[in-house]
Image: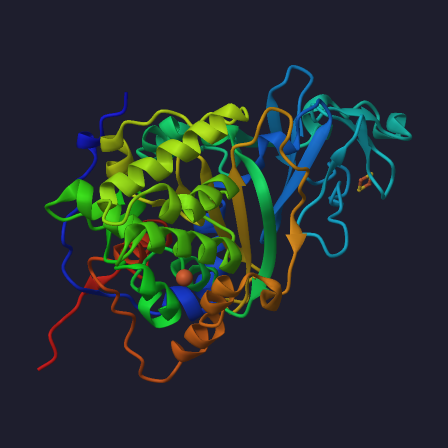
Length: 453
Ligand code: FES
Ligand SMILES: [Fe+2]
């Protein structure tokens, strides 16, 4: 069993100012390639996308392109997606896609037809004798890239000296292991482009401080006072519970007013307005709460009934929520920011993942991905692919978030703008990200916010 008490406690950090260099500087964006992207473990896809030997996906990050392949023995290996002959990218990204996904018995380079097996070995070189015997395996095989999996995700590391993934991820891995994220499958997953730096995009989703300003209609459902805590290189966020922990937590989840009605309304609104962080079962059961429970039912009881009923309905259709100690659920918070560019909003029966990455070395653009997962009955998960969507075609709550992206990016460039001053409590994940970034980039560390005279 995990020991949440061994986590760093939630602490109030002093106010900080973050210089805007990390968001707007072209030099900084170029330096990220060598100091950041080639040094970190990066989430590159899902294991279920490559179930059989020869199944592959690719992952691109700035100048680097990685080919991730299921091996004959069931393991997963990653290679530089670059032909050893004259450097042609081996597997092309289909037009309009963010990566390649497919199956191959072997790969033939499109330039001079060198052939590579799924274990990276080169098995055919036209005119090999012309090299006079100089072409040994170590010369011709695809370059190896560190690769491992956790949570059903494939992770790669371009650093030849990369340490173990598990050590990199802690304490995220042990805190999220009980949620069995590896058993979830996507309900939908979309990617898009923003006119902002990748950090601006991620930071729009790692705090709840923006809810009143960006999503005012959610205020009808309750309070969203949040906390954030740095954990190693990473951080996590959650909602305040206060002294009356159970009752307050229930109220926070269920909203203000009659908890039966606010739960029904909030679930319906969430399902229709953003289609994340819940499931059809939870939404359906929530709609029945005003009928199933008498008026005046305490919030904690409404919460218990709602979750227990949904859990039983799911179990009857073969969807089994993992058992997670309530103390562990509380300690884990609602979402983890995995350095540098991944966020997992976790729950026992669903998760919401965001990833952002640069689009070339222009600091003003990025790719952004949203993936919503849940548990499905065995064999009934839908087949999904990563789909490109215009920002205007996302659910409207996400469009509200998206509407800030370019405006933040442009605003930070104004002459004399001194830097960002995040809320030390609820926007601590922003401060944490820049602390970790500064460790890798050697610049841009948050500084204590001096009181103005
Ligand atoms: S570059 Fe690949 S075969 Fe020549
Ligand atoms: Fe938001």
